[in-house]
Image 1: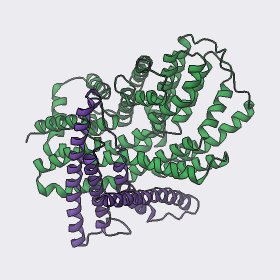
Image 2 (image 1 turned 180 degrees about the vertical axis):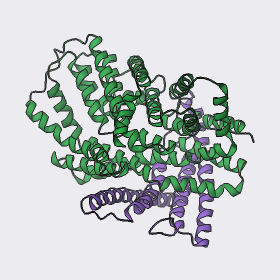
Image 3 (image 1 turned 120 degrees about the vertical axis):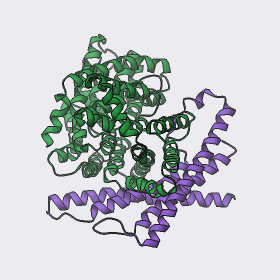
Image 4 (image 1 turned 90 degrees about the vertical axis):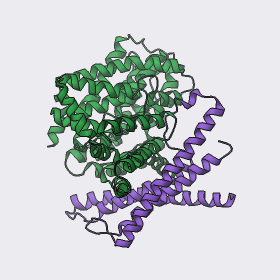
Length: 158
Length: 429
């Protein structure tokens, strides 16, 4: 069980690194586009699309590790007024709800990715790619985040 | 289900989850999942997926990640310390010198970073301890920092402007530049407040003489590269707002390189931090996107517009009510969460009443900023308190109220003279 958890953490960290690479790629693509268009009068037809795809990768590949580190924003006005035991119980409940919500969202998006795969659906772009590639990345990010929420809920240290 | 019933239940469910400490994005995701199931059923799953997909591939929202990265490069490379010392030298010996340094510095930071929390934390760590050591009035010191930090979401580039623009379907470039004059007005009003408080002549705070004024001016010049790479390129029509955020990142890297602060370790740390902040913001936006469509689907949007227009209130009174709601609610809930909830409801009303969208949304954005510096729950307050251990909560709250009043006075001026907001955006057209 512990090694499975470690594998999950390692995968999340690897995906976070991939998301970092996507962020760097976005900067490079846009800088290149401005140079190409303004100085060489040669705008590309692909850089905007590549940036769009990179954002999806950036967001949903980084999501599991951000969830692992419990870095998401919450409003803790009410929990802070509770006793430590009650606060811990509330946090556990919130993590279980979050697990359920992200798993359901992941399941819905994953199902849609399968439909897109079956239909051979492409992105609506000048240089289309299979749409399920991105939808599947979103589903994986949500499922992995769901697993992290479950692990937070089961964590005895709270 | 009637539109109003849906709206009431939706807001109730969301507030219940948010106040119980659920992650904000989970609150919105749960709301939309329940909304889709209740209003449309499994047929709405495609709509649910598309809403996340569209946000995750939105060129507008890339800008958020890029501006965060730009700010992180400047802060983590330590180049802002150089800027601080230069502004300190240039301000020279004045009444309440460090107050003026703080406001001047915040105005420049506002043009380099779009986040009030980042600026409050940075000034709380760097300038506030100096002011405390030198016997400055703690409340006035904390107040100038809160005011300065609150300029960041107003002076371009502004993360709030990008999110508001993308949700309200308003020109992002227009909204970005619209904050320029209001930001300067708020800076001037805060300066006037400092001088009215009869700040004592600063005897204990020696002027930084380790560099000459000429050297200080030279040290500030590289930062113009960043400002030009962002605002200059938008105004000249060379880059779109999203592209200008990327050129701003390149500009920030150039500045770090000029000062010899560019290295691999700093870059790794910066990318990791920028990525985390961006994901925390963008996942909330992606989770909330569907809410506006569900409101329309349930008929709540149409119902609300009819209700407001049938009330027969004059536009000024309606405007006042529309501004009071965020001001009060943002004292209790996160500004991004509120924005995502309110914009789909406000957008059709703004159109129906014929308000200038740039003017209205700029004031709305400033209002959110005021909400986040209003006790007891404003985010900016907690950022400052968290950055400075010697500051008590009572001192932070006491410092915030005069600044809230200053911003409300400024907003009244902007309401009375809309041209102060709309003049610069018109130049872009």
